[in-house]
Image 1 (cartoon, rainbow, N blue to C red):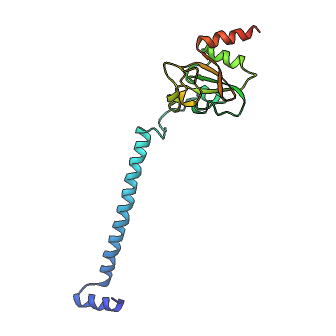
Image 2 (image 1 turned 30 degrees about the horizontal axis):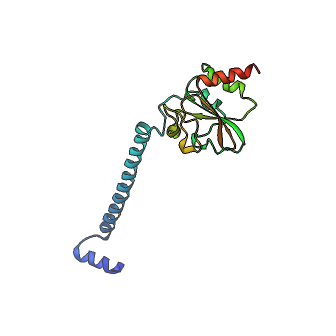
Length: 180
């Protein structure tokens, strides 16, 4: 309908043309308000789940200055154990959360292998769970066969394990190096 026809139709029915347009505007406003309200509700649901369920946002937690995270250098995933560019290097598996100052094994590794490239793997990381276990496999040839325990030192030469030490063996080996 044209504008003039609508005006004539409204005049016949005794309605004002402004009221019709106002009702249409009100419906559009209600529609926009409903969409904005739904988006707001979904945003609040996401925000609440991010804060309280998945902990993506940590607004309510105090920021702790964790020295272990910033001081651990040469960190790799366990899946990258055989993939480093050097021909000979060490990979040390241990829990980054334990206090390095109290760990004799970690202190020995850090102090005695200064001249060698040492990569470090966090045994508590969920990304490394497939390679950490109660029983180790020192003769692993590929990454799928690799199983280590906490505090394991492996020497990789040309993509294969040449030396493998666990817990007390690391202390015995590295303490022996001190006397050389």
